[in-house]
Image (cartoon, rainbow, N blue to C red; front, side, top):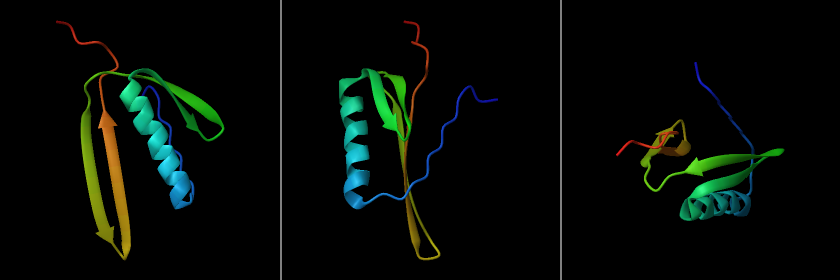
Amino acid sequence: MKDLEFTQKRTLSRAEAAGQLEALAAALRRGGQAELELGPGRLTLRIPDELSTEIEVELEDGKIELEVELTWHTEQPEH
């Protein structure tokens, strides 16, 4: 069972999509606690110094899907 899942699907202009990605990029640069505006509310995440990434591009039925996935552990690793 998942502790939390949030999914949002919206139609955005190219400029709006770029703004959303820029806000995410700024939060990644800052690290620490990051607040992301997601529709009606805000989501606060702790972003560590290192994370895993996956970029996937699919072309199917004349439609391109670009998926960017960022993954990290919620707990600090023990040294």
